[in-house]
Amino acid sequence: MEHQLPSNEDHAPSGKENGEKKRNKKDELKRKRRKLQEEQEIGDEKKRKLEEDQEMRDEKKRKKLLVSRFVQKSNFRKILGIYAKGPIFQKLTSRRASQEENSGSEELAKISKNHDDWSTQNQPDTYIEEEGMIELNDEDMREAKKSLMEKGIKSEDVKNLPPIEDLWAVIDCNKGKVTFNVDDKEHTVYFPKRIDKKRKMNNYNFGEVFEGETTSTGRPSRASTRIRRSYNEDVIAPSFDEGNGDPNASSFPCYEFLSNAGLLDDFLTLVGKAGLTTYMEDERKQYYTLTKIFVESFKFNNKHFNPTVAFKIYGNPLTMKLKDFCAALGIAPAGTSRKIEDNPRVLLELYREITNDDCRTIQRGKIRNIQLPAIKYFAYYLATSILGRENTSNISSYHLAFLIAALTGETPYHLGSVIARRLSNKGPIYGGIIASRILARLDLPLDPNDVEIPPVKLDIAAMKSHQFVTVDSSMDNIVYRMLFADGDEREVLLPQTDLFSIGRKPWSRSKEEVDEQLKIQGFHQQHDSEDAEPSYDYTVTYPVASSSTYLEPCRSSSYYGDTTSWGPWE
Image: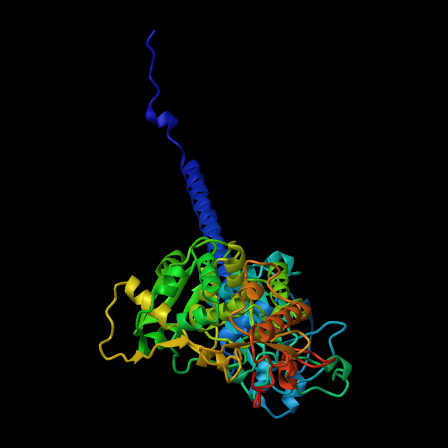
């Protein structure tokens, strides 16, 4: 039986089947096209939404740009570093648009629309007719965070404050607030100070409280407005001089004066323990332009792992690691480089010991309050040479950081960072030796047209100007003026090795101890001389000196000026 193979014709699809398959393919292609189109439409919609959101954010930023540019960013960083511990308030209501429209100021009305009011239950509902705002970039906010961290303030410790590097911020100059914007959520920090637009920030004298335009209902009571000027130069820029004037010569110790006063050994001991021997022995030349540009451009960047200093040498910007900066000055890079907190216990105890229990805070004290002459002389040397920016009136944490190293041999604070911080602040320029040492360290050429600054020594004339000795003192008759916290003074003929030795603690003397020593000396002088004279009363009270040291109730500790008539020492 023959088997017949099936022909192709028996299994060929009919026209109906072919049409069905074609329709299915077309439907499948249509579904795919529709799906792709829908996905593309969804993507376009998302893209449009993202663009709209970005435009809204940009528009919001544009509306919060400066009404009048009068705040300097560097000053804002300082304010943020001081007051970022203040309370943070959430957005409540929006107002003032209608008020601005009715005021006739179209530009301010546009800006005031969508402008959020920031207040709390305790915040007075005040209306300020004009506002000034400033936008801070990422670099500004990083600097602000650095200022916080240097003070030991962690961002998470401040309620509702996000990480500062992720923030965009606006400062409302009249209300004293900073608004942080993160992911369209705004947070505001209120500051206790207000900024006067008329005076502007570059003329702003830190330590003052400004008066703002407020309604009578929002005006604080008189009791709450009583203020006292602050002398905390670690937090608030000192007011003795805005600096950036003509540079002064870094002073050198006068060995003849120290030897005649019997202070040389103690002074060299202090210098050695502080690690400043190499620096002190370097009496190289100082130059006008080099010093001025170097100090005025000096910046300290206290990064956690790699702190640096930045400055200019004859207009050329340079950056140096902090450890290299210390090596150039001959200072050991030991101790913490974090910013010294306000009135730390160890420095406050030291200040009270060297001033015979002066009860003031560190920043309200004077260098003149230091009792032992060798320590006081060393403090003046620090102010006019080591620290680079002079302040020979108020004592500060900068001075005390060096004094604790000089007296104890311990270095709890990084002395190189102390110098760097002082150089980056304001004040008369005394950084000639520092600038010259940096120039030599970097092996850079000296400008042949630069002018040399004449050298200066802390001799008897300089110490008279600091009221260290009496005005009629001479190299053969050095009379030390010893000041006590209650305003009394004792005039003591130097040298007094036993009485004023830094090897005997405490590092101050009581009035009774000084009087007893002077009486003993007067007794021996009477019996050792054929022409004996009556014993001299060494007790002297200077009213003006008292005003600079003794604080009556509700009196500030500001210095009231130099004495015009001092009684001669006989």
